[in-house]
Length: 103
Image (tube, rainbow, N blue to C red; front, top):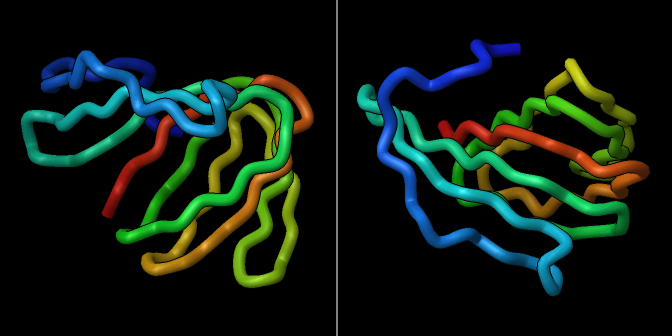
């Protein structure tokens, strides 16, 4: 997992809200131009589409991600990557705190 803090970043105040508020995130861009979101996902089943490759780090909780038909369970302290131009599904077992980095 990466460092727990961002020393210098521009943060968007308005939240990204999905699935009636069950999934929320805040966007930020680090001073070196890396785009990230920090968010929370409540238990449930969700589907997302990627434009760019996404690297997702879990800080709390547990989920099962289905990417290209393959399901894998992840928990706090683990991460996974979703390729660009991909639809993927997550099944959230317990509240997930995450950071997503866009490549």
